[in-house]
Image (cartoon, rainbow, N blue to C red; front, side):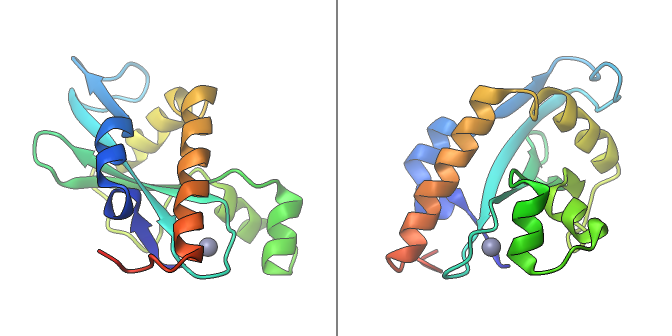
Length: 150
Ligand SMILES: [Zn+2]
């Protein structure tokens, strides 16, 4: 499951439609420090795959560094059982997330950022609908051979 930034294929649209969280002070409840956090969307670019997941590369506006990588899948548990052909609840849970992606380096505030996204992003239906639209758009490009264009 190689993930590629939506921005690689749709740079102009990504400029307009990438969510940025602005915190003028520490986020209540989670303690994420003040700053700007860009949610750069990456999707799987494997041909023929339909894993229905987004990987948010959370980038700090102050340093431009990736401070957390959060994976989230919107398929149902039964979708993921079929998708990978087994019923290990741990794997299903990992596919659905939201979780910090195990294979990615994570900044010191990554667990707090995960908590913040769970509270304010996953509950935002309009935003999640937009991410799903981006996924569909991205996957259609992969079908027509745009993979690794970047
Ligand atoms: Zn995939």
